Image (cartoon, rainbow, N blue to C red; front, side, top):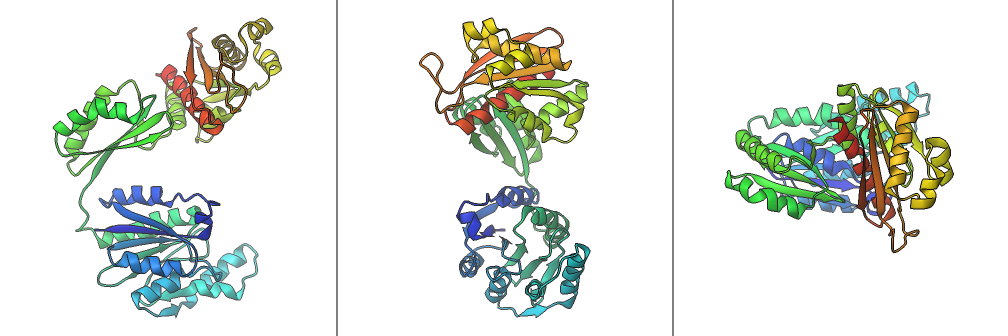
Length: 406
């Protein structure tokens, strides 16, 4: 089956909104044995109809996101009806449902909402639990189009609860099995990963090998229809890359850290300078992080390092704030002040200014201290781009906690 996605919305092409739909839908479809072959993004208006007609010349399944609202630029319903040669039929029960949602929130409904009750003849209506625009499934003897709302908080539950079950039932006898193992790797580039594993992996059999590189890390994907073969190749990759794999699947580093800390009954703390609280923020994005995270300090100024963490003035004068010695003192101060089992510290030069020949932009020091009395430091030279630097530094800091926990 050929699958394509059409994302609609001028705001996407203006860069005002980040399009996250492809990742979500593609991963879900992969679980059915389907692969997205093409994605296009078009502005609101006539381009939607053009994109639909183009996709229908190739695709068996088309997912369209956005353009189901009540305003004049929301024409996905109309464009789809025209492309499939179907009339739009008014459904009173849909409008009544919309009216009930407005009434429950004590909002006044206007006449524009009637547009959302129009359904292409023979279309399947997908209930929207979190918004007013229902989704739709429209089909002919060649192509199926699934129309989904644009907001992710509406699209995702609708997809999981309405569209996906419909597709599973529709194509139960046509969906080939597909298996994937994803390994997330920190501190090694994609070419080095390929050199270490690809030839031996491919020698085991027909498995698709793919790489997704991000600053300082890479995802290794192993895909194939034979589950046993995929697992066999994954076992080989795990052996070759054991020291740099931090998780499998889509788990984030912060999720790994919280999971490990909770499982071990350990608590963590952190002292941050150049990352400005990003490490703590990422940890607290994880549900149940309160069971593991105790304290976090953002000691951006030297005075804060002295008063909050007990860093000696003499250390700062002798070595400077960006140094292994100060990072170690910060970690030890955080451990002492929090009563945690593990504390991590990070101090560096995020740029784009502030560097010197001896300490260039991108230089960062980390320290990890544990209740068992072990303390170690690490020096890295990261990206001179400020936001990238901060993310990479936070990732390394979390990885040091991960390693301490295991």
